[in-house]
Length: 257
Ligand SMILES: [Zn+2]
Image (cartoon, rainbow, N blue to C red; front, side, top):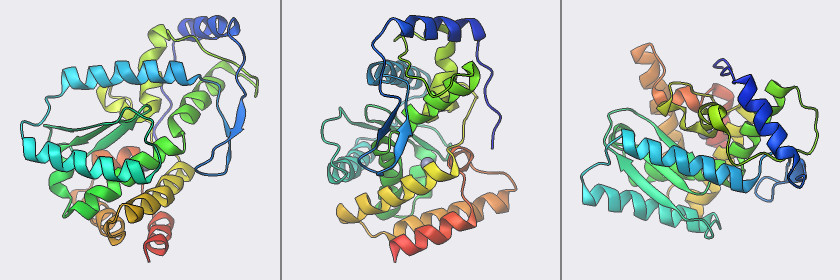
């Protein structure tokens, strides 16, 4: 697990104070995709705002791959999987970035970035669909909202109170963005928890299957990813945010069977 980023206390207190003026949100609600109750103290509006800023920053810093066929292939897989996930109300964007890094990320609101390194590493559309399903699983399960909420609660020492946050997070925006899973922009990466990874795997396999892809792609992708990391002696970028372990691989194999 990576260390928690240091939050700017002043900005955080400001954000919390601004939030106090807003109508309180329901702090704990059941997620329809997972059936699990979640602690969420950030508004969808704040998250969407944060995600849009982060997406714009990634696009400004990383060139988009100049390959129309590659972009169309990724868009086609993404649209199929997102539709089968039932998340048709989002303004999805699937973009391949021209970077050798073996990584991919998703932001709330449906912005999905794949780096060329990961697309080249994938052996088939089934494997790309496996990563796509997993990332879309993180969206369906609202993991970003949960992560940002947990970060805020830990840092502010907030009990399970109903809080709403300002749209403007000021200095805190970078750290909150790291909690979204786009920490690559800032050099601060928060790994997803074991529970979130297992949930995203379960949903991802369901979605890729429903979209007509072979679920075995999920198993072959993760196995090769792990083996490559071991050979290199350092985890690949993707694994630093999506940690893998034997229990997880065994669960994936059972899901894909
Ligand atoms: Zn993940």
